[in-house]
Image 1 (cartoon, rainbow, N blue to C red):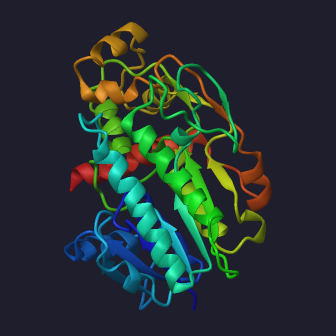
Image 2 (image 1 turned 90 degrees about the vertical axis):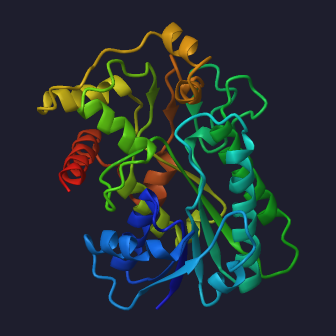
Length: 338
């Protein structure tokens, strides 16, 4: 049985990646910052699949060298999912950038040393947004200009970490070269397996459902379902055509946050507001509020993304947005009951 190291297995995407791997006959070693989280992680995964004896854990930190070489031992593949995320724009951008780049570097170096065949890295659509100052059509050749005015610390961290990964792969010296695939999702929604409502997606939906978001951001983005992201991560491991490529895993067309709110409103979530915040208000608030500041780059813009290569290579179609929205809301309701 082929073994896959999943970094950040306790996270929203990591949980779903582990489930998809186990369902497809892989053995999983998951990294945690603290091994005390292992029971919560097992319980989350068991909601979807019985791991039997095919799930184990190790302790890794994106900012520490300890344990990385050992974690890679016996693994044929790696899903490097772990990444720092803070729900606001930090005063010090290195809170994002340093662990993103250093963690990716540690994963690549140790994987290469252990003879891992292929590593799949979770990047983001935010690494593909040009100057982040106008509506653009995003494709696999698009890159964010990290020196542009509206680029947030999170956008910089994902862009720089991904560029660092491609540079590492390009500069490999020996003949047995490790392969790289990068997955680029947009804003990620879909059910939570752990019941943790502290992630960006869960916080947004929880606020909307509870009527604590009187205005929604005026922006249109290609949305992602966490189950699609996990599926493409796993399909990327052994697909020969995937090597050396970036894959956008989002809906075919962009959706406004107002569209998500309307779906909820039309399905009985009566406290949800569908009123869009004026651009000037969010831009004004961003001078004082770090959460608003993190949204400044996308306010008032519409992005579209080319998912054709993802669809063709993996024979895949994204989950319908209505299903994503309603499944997200349902899982939040379940979590709040406990």
